[in-house]
Image (cartoon, rainbow, N blue to C red; front, top):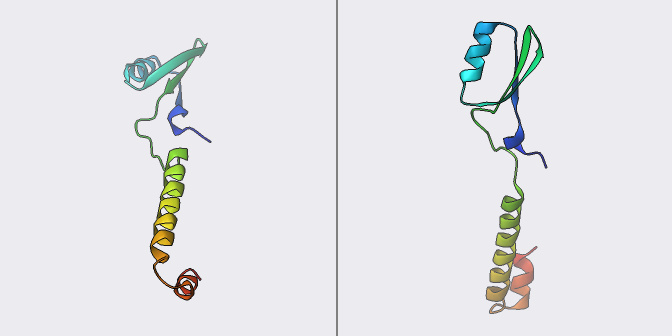
Length: 89
């Protein structure tokens, strides 16, 4: 599964003034000098949008389904078997 926290933004900067400005940012992770006129600056994203399901969310959902099914089955035993069959169809 893709980790959104491991994503990086990359800026290629060729101006000394822009290089100084980019390196002062609090989101700088790393920089690499490509050649004497070009620097690659790696930045962490400012905001991370968690729009993909996580494994824990999936497990919580599945466990809640099991709990609900067990609850309904245990309470359904007090009714007749024809009522149970009609409610689950």
